[in-house]
Image (cartoon, rainbow over all chains, first blue to last red; front, side, top):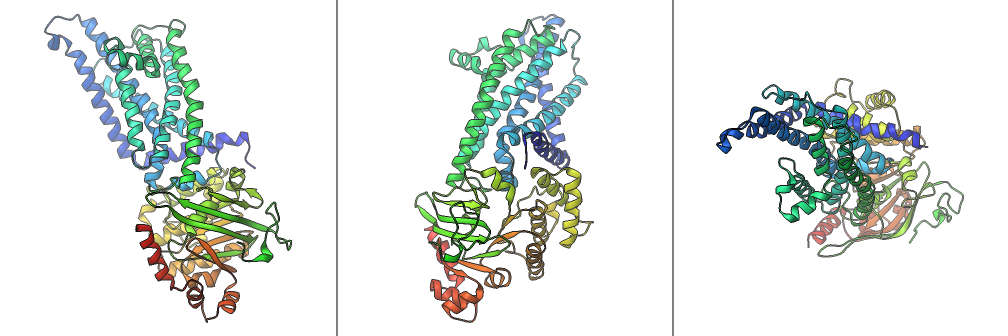
Amino acid sequence: MITLSDQPKLAYAFVAREAALMRRYWLWELVWIVYGTVTSLSVAYIGLAAPAITGSEVAPSTVSRFVLYLLVGTIAWRFLGLVFENIAEVIAWERWEGTIEYTFMAPVPRLTHLLGMAAATIVRASVVSVTTLFAVALFIPVDLSHADLASALLFLGVGTLAFIGLGIASAVFPLLWTEKGLQMAYIVQAVVLLVSGVYYPTSVLPGWAQALSVISPATYVIEGLRGALIDGADPLSLWPLVWPALLVGAISIPIGLAAFVRAERYAKQTGRLKRSG
Amino acid sequence: MTLDLDLQATRDGTVSRRGESLALVARGVCKSFRGAKTVRAVDDVSLSVRRGEIYGLLGANGSGKSTLIRMFSTLLEADSGEVRVFGHDIVADELAVKRLINRVSVEASFFKKLSAMENLVYAGRLYGQSGPDADARGRKILERLGIGADRVDEPLDKLSRGMQQKVAIARAFLTSPMLLLLDEPTTGLDIRSKREVQTFVRDLRDGHDATILLTTHDLDEAERLADRIGVLHRGRLVAEGSGEQLRARFGGNDLESVFMTITGRRIEEAANEATEAASA
């Protein structure tokens, strides 16, 4: 009989499996880290080139702030994007490996399965993002002397919860549409990127995009991270940005999970829970 | 329709009316797939499998064997009818059923870049075992199946199809299932690997408290392994009994003749017919 106290052990099965897969696919992990570093550097150089691009003098402190503004956006998005992708791909990846039937036949509650995958994802996203940050710092001076790390960790935690919820909800698409489902999940991710102020303030967006930015948790998480890392704002002063992101997580996780369980049942009724479409 | 009336189950599906313990009971199970054309894959199938029995489900490709076994594995829901595993309803009590079963499918479903041992330890953990326990048990089972210690840590895509299938059987055995569902476990294997797998299946039943439901389109395999055989044709269970009973009832010296008498076709012809119907 498997009880509630056994659930962490069951969830760990997914963490250990993902760690083993990362070891086997280590070259791909390296490729993604290099790709992430190059992307972040490319964005940061836009900041460094501000005087040249605008054709006017810009104070060095302003350039430094601009670079950090962009770097926080790109690296935070790297982290949140990985959390989202890994969870949204939970069905598509197993289908591609051909293991979906075996995993879904195992006596593991779906919540435990998805939380195990989320834990593995947080480890992977943290390793990749921290490595990227250090790699970028080798090329561009990153001034974090004013940063409030407690605030930054709080926002990363809150953002992780919200993106786990969005990822679970988006993982439903590949359950329902075996061939096009994953593309739909990527579209969700792309829209969140556009409206959340990752590289610019949301105030420059058109009205419809600003409306969407209000419901995107990334809007609050990235603005909060900038406040924490650039201005050294403490958690209390950033509370107006914490609670909306927390609310999205509190809503999206149970709703995503309920949608996933319902979609799994539908997939079983229609014969979609199998390795090929 | 239940063909073997002695094995009709009581309402809770745990024992037959004759008092024998039952591992699996299916009553009036139907499954159709809707598309451009609706295909009725399983049509009103009822069967019971005794505890400790090897039950062979024989049929051509496309006869509904895999659909039926996917329903017994909790991967597919029946449109109507009822399935019970050791008395547990397969839909209402899904987690309890999952703890009692395991399945080996015709395709070895593995993380191919992981080794046999990494796949086995993952499987053991999913069934509540600790990593070291699963590792120790897995190595013993693989050794018993003739996979040397020098191969168990290699990525699975480096192993032959026969070895992969043995690892699949080891994985199922690792979790000590009360009901083992083998979906064409020897399809595509060479003669030697096929014999080794068949011997292991027999040993599994004889040495452990396992009930085995085996699907096959290999008449020789059905005769060699199964205590009772159910013949599935166009989604319907059209005959059931031991090899001897089937031969006595339908005439002929072998199961090929029995299959011909029951379905009016050779098993290969029935498979071709099903393929054509599916692609029409």
